[in-house]
Length: 127
Image (cartoon, rainbow, N blue to C red; front, side, top):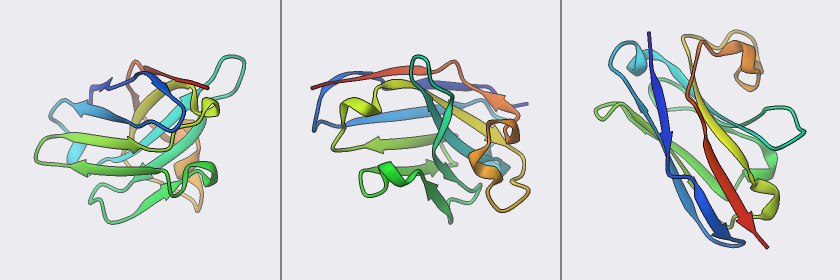
């Protein structure tokens, strides 16, 4: 099993930056693919960024490309999401999730692909 705890959320002005962390318990974290998702009020949970277990491959939602960077430190059992040039539309609860595998071409985008989830951290971007 993998237990995930997000941190680093908060209130920031548009154009600002935040770095989210996803700390994992020991276990299968180092062999798990990790995804960051977000959910705004009244909207479905959407994929934001993902990274393979080795850190060699990353994926991003089109609207965050060039602004967000996902990375991981397997020695620290932590995945990061650096968010720059934040916009009010980035406001949401951000969740990290772990998957033992990504099956299918775009499965990394699908919440059902992931076995374990954190509790989420609120990100609010003011205009």
